[in-house]
Image (cartoon, rainbow, N blue to C red; front, side, top):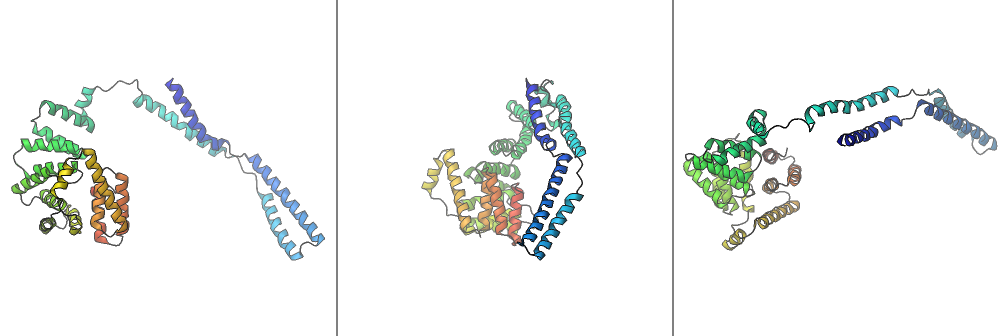
Length: 364
């Protein structure tokens, strides 16, 4: 039955492709059309002569009309019947038929459901060699279920989770890396960053504590310094955040990859809302995950509306783009990115920051 379905679908597609070629007019119909045109032009010349005899048209106008009709008549008389486009038609037919002719043997070799399956164990065993990332992740996860204290396994798994933006899973993996490793600023900062990304780009209290811990180990560690200052900014502690950002910028090389993000966060520091009062924070903590998500989306939509009314706010555009990506609104993030580029066309510094964020967010 499946072959009958495939044959019918193929025939329908071939018919749709070949119909324009098959219905093209033959040369005989073209010749008939030319003969008809010549007869019409001759009738027009005869009618023109009768109009002159009746005096309904002047001689000058008649001469001009006769010249034009004669020109068209000569052109129609000299036009040879076109040859059939048989060569082109046959080429089109051959090209169309090649598709199923090539597809069928390829299907029999690679897509036939009767081919032998690849056993799960074999797929797992060859996951790394074949570049099968999904199988590799499953293989490492299975191994870690039986060996939760295998540091190397967590070190393999954490970057894979990051690549797939499985931030909560990445946070769990980094938590185990921190648990099984000697104190290290990089590992602790990676753990905190995963918590931030899992929290829609907001720096929660546990993550902020991790960045503080990392800075105690290495006061100059870039990732910890950035998120520590960002956390202060999000809490409305503008003066402290500004001081932290400025100190970080002072130690940042001109070609540092995080410099554009740092400059973006430093823009319009006073535009941030003040710190939330304890009651508001307590109310937010009691919200369900869906309610918190709705609140975040409402805030992002409000930011978008403000930018529509007052687009000259670079920091706002950068925050909007980042928020849309974190929320998974890819189309809206792309639209905000393009709108920001249009808004700041001609401003090289602003365009550089927007483009850098676009690269980081994979919007280019």
